Amino acid sequence: MVPEGKLAAHRLSAADLRAVAAGEIDALVVNRLMAAKLSRHQLLLAALMRAAAQSAAAAHAATLVPAYRLLAAVQARDERVVRDLLALPQVGSWAFHCLNRLNAFPGERDRVSPLGTDLGQLAVIACAAALRAGQPFHLDIPLRHGVVTFPALGTARPGASADWEWGRACLDDQGGRVSSSVSTVHIPAGESESRSTGGGWSAITRLSAVSSGLTVEFWLDDRDPYLDRFGLARVTVDRDDLLAWQGRLAEAWRIAARRHRALAAMIARVIRTVVPLAEPFPAQSVSATAASAFGAIGLSLPDDAIAMAEVLVHECHHAILSAVTDLVPMTGPGGERLAYAPWRDDARPLGALLQGTYAQFGVTGFWRRQRHMGSARARLRGDAEFARGLAAAAVTAATLARSDVLTEAGRQFVGALRVTMAAWQDEPVRAAAKELAAEGALDHRARWRLRHLRPDPRTIQSLACAWLAGDQPAMLPAAVGVSLQWQPPPSAAGSARSYLLLLRYSDPERFRHWVRHDGPPTGDERDHRQVDPADRALLCGDDAAAAEGYLRRIAVGDDSDAWAGLAVARRRTGPARVAAVLAERPEVVACLHERLRFHGRPDPDRLAAWLAGSS
View (tube, rainbow, N blue to C red):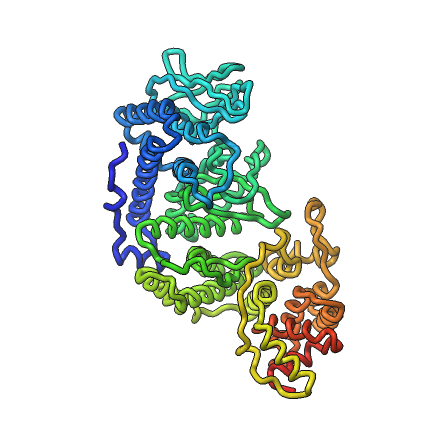
């Protein structure tokens, strides 16, 4: 059942890698990646069995061995059922988690479930296979607070007298059943996983859509304990939620299948499961993938169909690159070093930056086509998203290319990405969209630099002495050394101004309500952000009032958000050299300004002009 060494047989050719780097991923490449992931899950299972036999977990062999034997018996009866089950994302996530527990891997999150319950999940997996194949069995299974979820089938709730009780599952001439110390629940067998027998059984929900001859079908799984691996809160989907998810998918699939057919075909093949996540704030959707759960994506319900299509493209590219790097390593030592990612408020390891760059590349390609379709407002949004995404991915691809962490394959891959994006740079974009994208990018970059970069203190002291002496600065801001200091992620709410700068083109009506009413629309009671008066002036185009407001805030004390706002305002109003210093090295100006606080805080514009060598 688990062919040793099979993973080593999987290969991607140079042509395959070039196709992935160009975003031209055909069905043959996807099939190779899917086959490699299945082999990986099989090898993880074999490794788990060996590790369990060689450790203190050997006491659980009474559970593991019968479960493994049942899985082998089902495979002899119907190999397709076992293959499909072992390929599920939650199976990979479970095996990876258990191996980490057995090996006391320090990066694994602490779990409340007993080791025996985790290892016993193999019995649940084997039962799911037997139920699908119609293979008779009797097997002990672990219950979690009286509940057990069979992968890609459904959930039985027989109840229990203890949190981690073991129950009994069976399939015989009386049908499928799960029994506990409290009750017995009848469960369906065969391929009728969508059927509900009532009582304590409920099937896993399926989402599906058909458009232009292409079909997509996802499990919407809010229950499986090994799909809770995205670092974000998972939510339970009720009937009304399900209708919203189904409707949003149907609308998004019409966009994807009709206008982005190759991408849609890839999504339909790669993504198998959607895990519903909670929004940290209203209208602020989130999404994620987990390397150990290939084929699953976590996301909150996107605001509209185009956002849904975009997030499917984004997360599918993450999944594809994760599968590729299993076969072709692209980063080596040093991948943990931190760098700037224009789509994140935290500093990212270079290894993760490659993942983010490829996902951003995929989304940019999506907007490259989408921006020519729909109303004038939709085309403006598409142009702005294309310009913003292209600039962001180009920056991080250049960062990676300059680094020494890429393998030879990684260098070729990133080089191919850069060639494709360089060709996109020549495509015309509306001036208004370029400006919207540029301001949003500047605001984010300035806030990030002010948060994470610390100028060399000796240099700042030297500059302070020169300022006080009335001398010219000994060096330009670009020459000031900085150190990158990791900071914990900021509030999930993020910057209200940054959010609104993007909302200007993504949802103009919502933007107008925010600016007019100093807060979100009715129904978003969880969102307590308010619009600062200086930000409102900036967003309404009153640049002079905005600059005055930011200058007042800076005069009161250290205010990195005000410095970033001033950088955006001065981009509009100048002078050009002041604007350039505030945009490119805001942390130097802010740090020097703070150093001079005991000598009467200087005017930020004058200080920036002095640093630029223009005063």
